[in-house]
Amino acid sequence: MCCLSKMEKDLCNTALAQGGIAGVYNSPEDKPEYHKHDTFVAGGFENDPESTDVLVNEAKIDIARLIELGCDFDKKPDGDYHRTLEGGHGMHRIFHHKDSTGAEIERTLLASVNALDNVTVLENAVICDVKKTGTGFSFLVLKDGAFTTYNCHCTIFATGGIGRVYEFTTNSPIATGDGITMAYNMGAEIRHLSYIQFHPTAFNDEHTRQCFLISEAVRGEGAYLRNCDKERFMHNYDKRLELAPRDVVSHSIIFEAKRTGSNKFYLDITHKDPDFIRNRFPMIYKNLMNAGIDMTKDLIPIFPCHHYLMGGINVDTYARTNIPGLYACGECSHTGVHGNNRLASNSLLEALVFSRRAAGDIANRLADCKDGFEEYPFSVDPDAPEMPKGLRTQIRAIMQKAYFVLPNIAELGPGLKKVTEIKDMLYNGNFRTDKDYVEAKSLATVAYIVLSEAWKIATENAEITKSKHP
Image: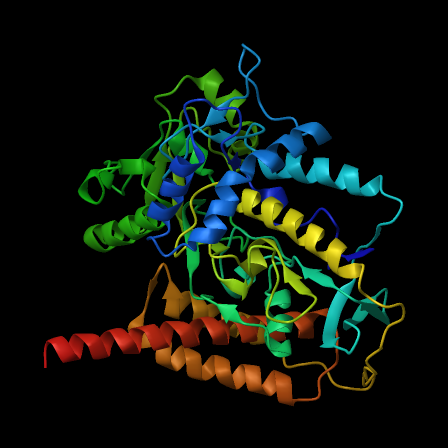
């Protein structure tokens, strides 16, 4: 088995996940149906019922497996696991390791993978192209300046989201939509790519593209949101106040910004015990101190920022796509469990549950695979020129203007037209095949799909309104 990592193997969105992993495990007062209800409410009841049933009922399997592998979830003095609360959850069901749960889960899983003799991990290996063959798939991979073709019967895309299509995102540099683009070009069904989640409380620092996230759990532990006048305002928008789901809070901030004429917003947890804050949120506390802010005394500047993708490569409950042998897991996939808005701390759970099911299905499938591979004859022009400079910057600016938190109807049409021109130029031109070109082509493709969906929805809504009010 071979695992290709575009950059370092520990560089991914999983490592950045702060809050935790949601799930009902050894909790007498909680039930999977409660977890399902909260997931449906957050997702606007657009969630897929079958996939969501799998998610909430099999959560205990994967949480138990993580514990067995040595994942160090926080415990209470009585020895039971500490479960925290986040926006949209009706129960304390989120297992966490301080405020760096994703990094702890990644550490646990990488240690397990590194101990396997039958797994090879190749870092800094860029997939430049992939083709469906008669026996499976051929991948054109660029590593250390050389191109190599890898072949397989079955493959899993776990390539993350599309965060780098925006000017500001919480995502790591790998999140350029490569897997979604490759699947799209092979004919895989892509669903709901315009279902994008903007986290309401990213640290407001305009000097860096990758925004530092102030975890949902900070509000779960009692932090208040304040506007430019240092006043709480969530009571004007939702009865759940700061614990409303992420889309509600993000929309509320945008509405409040329009009302006040200011983009200055703050998160305030100064009323809590300083020692509790430092012990509960050591990573957030450290990062904020490095920025000159003491969260035990100071208000934290925040503003919504691109965070997560609910749509992606459409899959079934075993992570199978409509292309035989192609699977997709994690943020690049669309399992349907999130509906139109992800409930906090369901993403790590989704990745674990459906990747485990995919692995089992592949194991069964490989028993019928014959030896040998058909290899696709890739061709690379070593003398091709570099693509024009500044295309990625143009794409990010278009997306930030046309589709940030709430769609900008006036900018959707012009934005889609320009993105289409960039995409067509990249696909039809003869440009040097390298990492920059691959990522630019991916960003142009996912931007095109997102804006096409958003434009279609806006047009349909306009027609409905027109028919009701001729």
